[in-house]
Length: 208
Image (cartoon, rainbow, N blue to C red):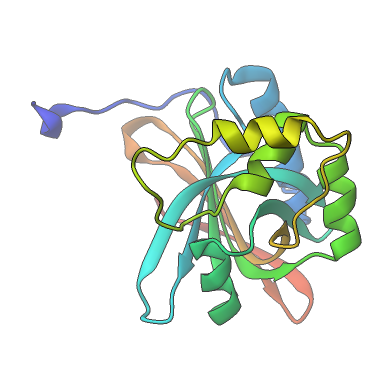
């Protein structure tokens, strides 16, 4: 494989540095809406990175489920490795990449559990098969190679209502840094970075 010669010249857009939105979450929402129109993949998929008690980082793809005025929400099993990492170290990073727009957004922030009521409200609106998956999954736990989930699925399918398990819920990420990256020709990419300082968002342009 000739990996060293794999490259693409980006030329689909640019960031207008003469007209910058002072609110990065509003700017993110604008980019997200454009991604919904252009992408044919899950635009809410992002890479979530956490760090465990031994300072070893881990990354995995997670789905964004809400954009709020001051942050972002995703859901997971609270017994998962990501949730246990957050219990120890609340610092997380989120990385979105939208290839058809040649855009990337990097977010650094603090994660905390949302309320049980908020998690319950979201769980009630999930598809039934997703509710069942959350109930029967012991995420990040070792199981036998020949383990058959179908018996558990059949048992739950006889229930009229699937209740949210106590080990499942949401996290809210409060951002402190958000960087918007737009691919440009000759690797001279646009980078616009926001940082939360004393409650105010300060933005700067960075060299590619």
